[in-house]
Image (cartoon, rainbow, N blue to C red; front, side, top):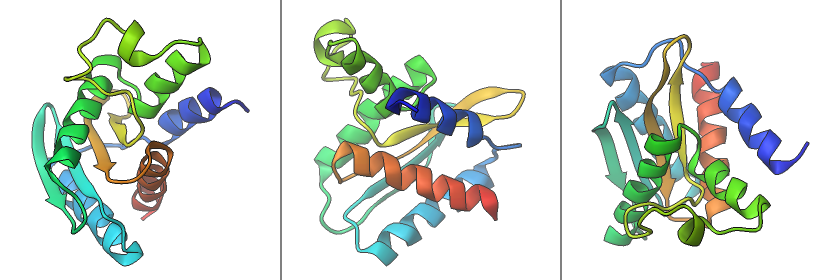
Length: 152
């Protein structure tokens, strides 16, 4: 399975039955607890319908990580796919998102770490993401935590 296929499979599999403000807060706290337990310097963000419902920054992060989350979240909002998948799709074609998307790289970043919050029968309703590690690690952390959260 190619990386693009694996990323698509993750998005198809990691789907909520519903997603309320309380769910967003619980998900954010779940990711924050996991980051603390692993000693990771992460910013955690959860949004629903464009509203930021959870945001926390652990030691070792900066305002730059907040900006990365916002830029990656805009990519997910625009494409309805994880920020890592969008960037990988450009790379697989021998392109770069920054040069070939025709979007302002100051506002959009197709780097791993933000994942779509999808509700079955509804579609993408928000984003969950982290910033602070290399992009593949940011993405893998979010996926692992979503898997654990949805399995509860």
